[in-house]
Amino acid sequence: MDHNKLALPVGTTLDRFIMRKQEDFPYATGELSQLLRDIALAAKIVNREINRSGLIDIAGAYGSQNVQGEDQQKLDVIANIRFIRALRNGGEVCTIISEEDEEMIQTGNNQGKYVVAIDPLDGSSNIDVNVSIGTIFSIYRRVSPTGTEGTERDCLQTGTHQVAAGYVIYGSSTMLVYTTGNGVNGFTYEASLGEFFLSHPHITTPKTGAIYSINEGSSDHFSEGTTAFVAYCKQQNYSARYIGSLVADFHRNLLKGGIYMYPATKKAPKGKLRLMYECNSLAFIVEQAGGKSSDGRNRTMELEPKGMHERSPLFIGSTELVEKAEEFLAAEYSDVVAAL
Ligand code: AHG
Ligand code: MN
Ligand code: MN
Image (cartoon, rainbow, N blue to C red; front, side):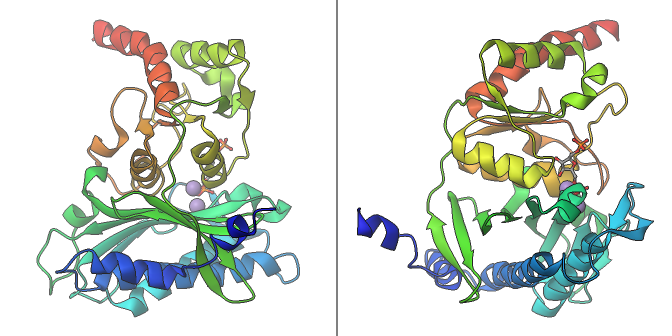
């Protein structure tokens, strides 16, 4: 057995890693570093709640709906509170967009230079059944002057303006994966020590893969292009893998190679997933890992957001597979243009 191989990954704590990275930028003031640490702290707390959820009364529905008209689970609400509290206490963030809140949240820290978009708990339908769930976030630098409240313009920047993005997967182990635009690194949580340790340095995603992930239960509502691409995946003998938690499906495909799709359907012409705190965040990560993300035609990160909770179709993963899907979809886009 190669003992070095086992010993190597556990070495650098997330805190030290963030500090080292900050030293690469001589004029960095440390605020972004602190903000990432705030998110990691909230993730640890949420992880604890999730681990205990079968034992205490926090599983199940909360009895209300969020802005998208979806039933909120108790853990959706708890995770939202935890992340907002950590970001508010940290002081670096002026404004937050959360899946669980219709309006932007002013933290009261008007000196804060950053805006965060967050899906506090992703994969709500899997909470009660012990299946991997996650948190997804994007960080932007505000464009309005400091000293005032954040504005809609701060919140509606294209994904190309992200300064950092990441996700936490609460799975068979809990991991934090993030990028600040200089590659992607993954950290595994060691609960007895209360620390995230670098375990997946410089994640790169395979150029191609043999996994396709889509909810085929909706196939009656797929467009012709999507239907044809799914048929192509089957002809290629790709494996179908669909957990139903975007974070978990994305994480698997990132490491193994593959494509995740949440297409536009006849019922939902813009798909289901939210541009600001699902699609853009993962698009930044996949691109930094050498992969690709689009709405079937346009690069996700260049889509102009019109609303904080806007949806977008999502085709994300290995470059070759996303490009192949775009080929299948190109015909229908030209049909749409021809019909105009
Ligand atoms: P959320 O729990 O944050 O509302 O997100 C759920 C999303 C995403 O995690 C998942 O990939 C997708 O919904 C699953 O939707 P379907 O059940 O329609 O496949
Ligand atoms: Mn989600
Ligand atoms: Mn959610």
